[in-house]
Length: 359
Image 1 (spheres, rainbow, N blue to C red):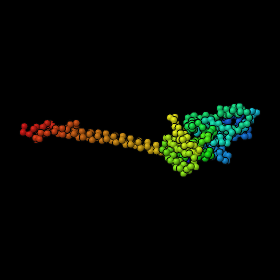
Image 2 (image 1 turned 30 degrees about the vertical axis):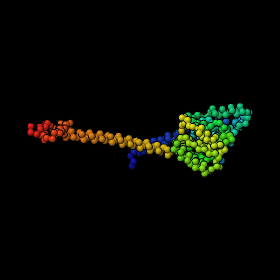
Image 3 (image 1 turned 60 degrees about the vertical axis):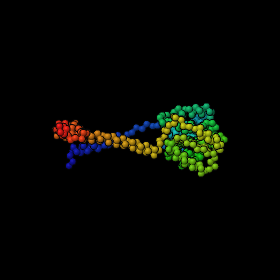
Image 4 (image 1 turned 180 degrees about the vertical axis):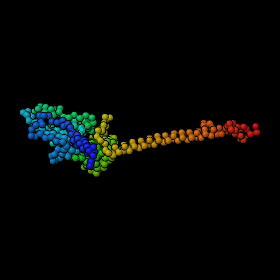
């Protein structure tokens, strides 16, 4: 027979476990802020989703590479303007900038706002279209901190002679290839957190700028790019390669030698350059190794100094204790303190004084 008290405790424990399990399952999740205003979130064409869009084709892989989080598509129906509007939200502003440059090649209207990209295909008056886009932009989620910072690399492009709309900013090999990059994607170093921007100049050629986390990584991939250009030879046009710290510049196409040289030498890093992307794991590992080594050296020196002090106190204290036990002063050693340089024998007395021989 099981005692009633034991049975009661078992039932109470089971009941508590059931309550705990039920409590753990109760979770309140706040829905995300809508990407589209209420006006566009109605009708049969409204679509919202998280992660990569479900369509097939080239757009999906590029947007996934750029870090898409969610999207929302709606339809505007009005007398002044009508058409479709799609909003994509990305992890950070760099991914949004890359996606915006990619989407501009096929969409009539693309606007980037922070970490979001608005793609609109509207028909009607320009004033109504602009008003609709402003309404969408005002309601978009705002992101601060490093994730909300726009990439600095495109701002280094020289503006003189720049072909408008030819700028393409890329964070990965899929988007870089889709936007017509001039270099093989495998030698750029996207796995080392590289950023690339390419632009065409009217009647001349193409400028490619690459930004890396460290000058060492830039040097390694700069040498690979130089070897690739040497293999292509004259087919690449006028090639001028220059590296400044983590920045690599490359000209290709129908430049004159003087124009290409002046272009790459005229671009310089500014003091406000910051890196808001995660650096590659190898860079983190090297930093951790250096910090660990310096910490180990400091700890070893500290332990050695402490051990030396403890050993000195132990030996000195032990020697003083032995002298006290022998009835001698702890801090004096008269038989070692007197040095007779006369060359005559002297008798050492018990009190520590000496008498000259023959006295």
